[in-house]
Amino acid sequence: MGGQISDLEDPTVTYVEDPSKIEVVEATQYKGEEELYHIEVYATLDMTVDVFVQKSAYYGSLSERVPLAVCDGDWNKWYIWAQIEELKLSVSFSLVFDATQKTVEDFEVSEVGDIWGWCRFCGAQVLSEAAEDCWSCGKSFG
Image (cartoon, rainbow, N blue to C red; front, side):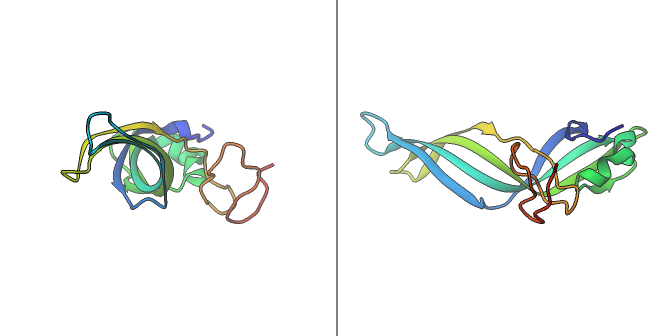
């Protein structure tokens, strides 16, 4: 088995750090509501993600291509439970903010970016589908 990102099953975000990048894309005040705003945000987050991996994939070549920390190597007869730590993902979300109450009235994640893989030389996360070289070690993927 080749060991692909698609071999990571049932991903669950278990921890999110403060964003390393945050950008307010748009902020709109609701008409008739003096202190109610709809805000669109784009952020890059560092997170920890729990995944399940078939043992055949893990012991094939996936463990060499994906930085997995094994939590339970014998979760069951077929699967390993593991974590990916310090995974960077781009997330777009919107919220409704009540400036009078200083509360978030509604929150919705609209898009979560893709995982493009990890450098086979140094293990750094590949941050773009179009990347030709590793941003960390500078080696070519070609």
